[in-house]
Length: 129
Image 1: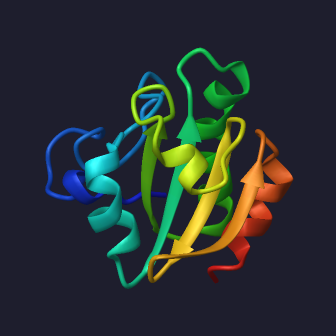
Image 2 (image 1 turned 90 degrees about the horizontal axis):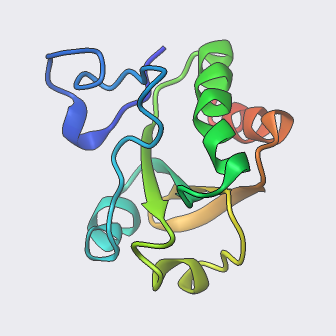
């Protein structure tokens, strides 16, 4: 299983090649400035996890996402948005609490999951097969 991260596609260690290690909680954190080009400007499916470092359920999301992707066997680009560091993005995308996982396709929201719910994350990812 690999979760594809735009800036981590070219060789190197496990974390650099796009695999999540157990100590790498939130890979590819993007800023407000990067969001338009990396998420809204893509012509493919992109997952975005809105999180906060202080949020306990948020800390469970990466293992849930990883487990679901291993089960479903797909590759997808995943970005994370720290709501404390990019406070403009959550209200712009209707995010009032964290964690929220949003699936975008060609810049438009397709589906979202509220909370650290493995069943819902799996349902979201199955939509991609």
